Length: 114
Image 1 (cartoon, helix red, strand yellow):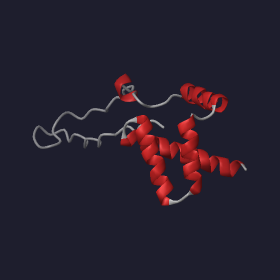
Image 2 (tube, one colour):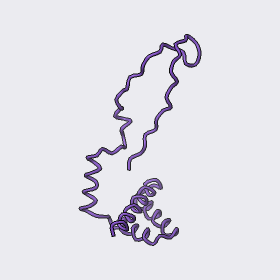
Image 3 (cartoon, rainbow, N blue to C red):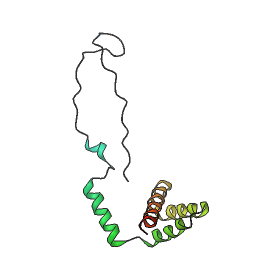
Image 4 (spheres, rainbow, N blue to C red):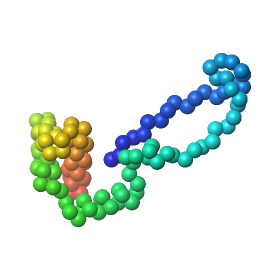
């Protein structure tokens, strides 16, 4: 649900020489704790659980139910129609794609369940 964090490529180990690309004193790098700003967007277990419980109790919004009906049809046209509906309701293409993916997972979970 959250965005993935991009990792920097590790710097090559210093050679201990005074010149060159990897110049510098050889030291062991400390493992630093993650910055709070880098944690943004990543869900913790508690929030994930609360959202699951709320979804179970409240159910789907009317536009989400309509999207589910469109996705149950399974054709490419209805898949696109579901995206257009989500875009109209949520405002952006990215949010619409995310919601369509979420609803298609809900449909597949319903099929698995019975």
